[in-house]
Image (cartoon, rainbow, N blue to C red; front, side, top):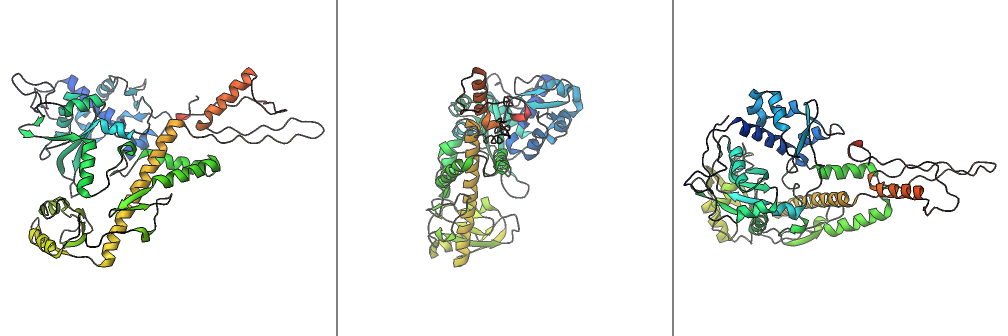
Length: 470
């Protein structure tokens, strides 16, 4: 375990915005670090996007997770020498984020998991570049560096897709509040990492900048839904899909289904090659609708296997065009404009080899070029579909789904026995409001019941999260 970390307080005579080494940490600091790590595992920034943690979280209806299991994680290894009781004591010091059970064997988050708010998430996030190569303990050092401006939710070290996933030297830091993010962005003089100046901007500005560089449409920040891009698991998408499968076509009624279909169709559209494509409600599209300018794509080949040096290829092409091309590991590159014969010759000269290995450039065949744009369209269509599903999950979470209709009462019995059978159960969760309304009406006698209908049994309370009664 490292005995030095970045100080949260500036040394006398030192610039407080420069990362410096601190004195050895004490046990209180170590406990605080252990607590923060577990709080991160169960945070909004991690839990819904970590498949293993989400499996543990949903394993039982009360969402308790074994402390012993969490203690076995790689990033918890440095706390193992202190023992189980020490870790439990550290977790009990949480100020409302997590709680430990009476036996000291399980932990859970306190607040329910809710879908994120896109613009609010962007307001709290910053992009910072200039941290150099990764060193042991760097994750912790980065966290402590940003904590000087306020509490943080997560610091994500950005990595390449190459073998070993090396650190890019840049991070996204998500603060817990907008004020902390603004304090960091407005710091004067600008923060440094050692003697290195840092490139600093809001995540919002970064998304706009990269979209323009790559020739992509700038996303509408009001519809931005974090957690869909670059992540193989999203609990909100999963919950939406499970709810849809469980409820079936009859869950919300035909009217809701038609409304959802129309809304989905209105949202699902993508831009490929500078042209708009309207998607079907399931995210599919007609390949004949794909239009593009011929000659903007080149094919490249080299002895790279699965380790295509995307970043190095991009850097080698600097100066040929105003913007760097989009490089696909399949061996295709899309440029911001049509590649002329002269430009192709310049590309071949500048990138005759990358990382010591020869690379060859050529124009693709018509089928290869069209196949490239179809694959790009499929990628954007899938992304748009996931974002639409997440958006619906957010909307449903905010307003609650509509409950299913109660079953019809049985027919009256023979010989004047006019009492009908009992109606079916009311819909769960989304039908809570209707259920409570009926209960109030029955208690006050103010129900707008049809003539002759008299309820015989008060409706049961609907179950909510974890099976507890509302």
